Length: 184
Image (cartoon, rainbow, N blue to C red; front, side):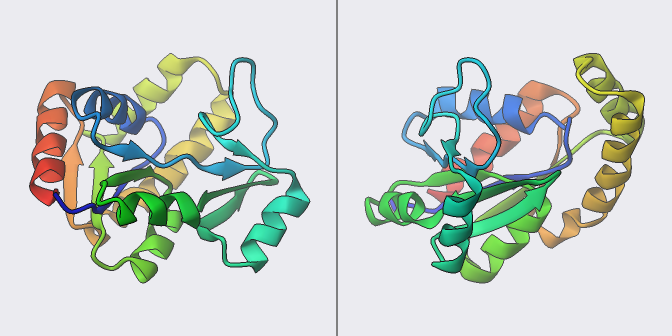
């Protein structure tokens, strides 16, 4: 088996995290990339497991040093993928999965053009809106912003090697597993 970089993206609320959790449960040989961020840890979050928690200065040093595969700033916080763990897993011939946003996926494509890039789509915008509202974690205005961003992201879906519509979780998972296991 040869390790491969697998990039999973799609709009917020599309079910990327749910699909990824199921994929990793079925395929423990896959390595999940851990992102770095400047957000403060939430209750129960562990450094190096949920995120690498950096302060702003450390993150900016990492940017300047080229130590991040991709990075972006959202709502005053930085998020990015440290390159060293990715390179280490690939050197061990382990496939590594990055669950990242569109901007990061575009950055990764420039550095790793052979990465397997998969875009997760909602069945439609109404379903996506319902999923986001069901979370009950955001204001109506924040949801509206997410939906506007989702329209932009969905329009970019054709930039990816494959698109999977997450209408039925088990069907979407089967499609994702087929792509990932064929990539290994």
